[in-house]
Amino acid sequence: MTIQIKPFALGDYQTNCFAVTAGDACWVIDCGYEPDVLIEYLAANDLKPKALLLTHCHSDHIAGIDQLLAHTGNIPIYAHAQEQEWNMNPMLNLSGLAGRPVTATAPTEMLDDGQTLTLGDSTWRVVHTPGHSPGSVCFIHDESNQAIVGDTLFAGSIGRHDFPTSNVDDLRNSIQKTIMSLPDDMMVYPGHGPSTTIGHERQTNPFVIHGF
Image 1 (cartoon, rainbow, N blue to C red):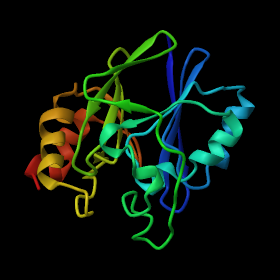
Image 2 (cartoon, one colour):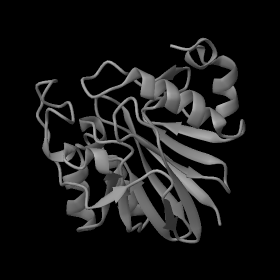
Image 3 (cartoon, rainbow, N blue to C red):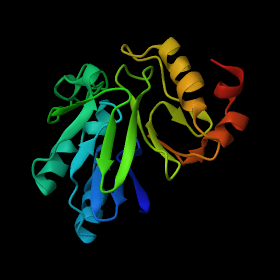
């Protein structure tokens, strides 16, 4: 089965949000500010998401949730249990700190490390990668060598770790021990910026090479 990951850079933060398809089955992963182009893509391709998955619950990854639900109707919303309350709390999702308070429908399903999720005939691993936020997770499809990693790792950079709920030691561990244990040829889709591969980041990313 072909897995297609279609990114949309949404809003002022250019947050990568994704329509993921396996055959006729579809997920949305993250839904940030100004999600119109994502919603239009779903409608144009007659895609009916079976769930919304969240890599983490910062405002730029959740701000468009209610607009998406107005299009899809109620669908399950998955997030890590450590961020169960964040969608409804602007100080936790950081929008309050930016002076643009955002709330969104709360997650209905809790994710945990090592959990598997099924989309069509495909099976995905949930990997907990705390640091940028305590409940950050990656969604990994081993068969097609593709991973959606949120704001943990970027092409040539790493996620911020200076927010009140960030933890630099956790981020270091998540990158060095968890993400860098993935195969070199695995395609990585970050929460911002271009896609990359594990091997490219292992060879060129200064934060991976020299630490932080």
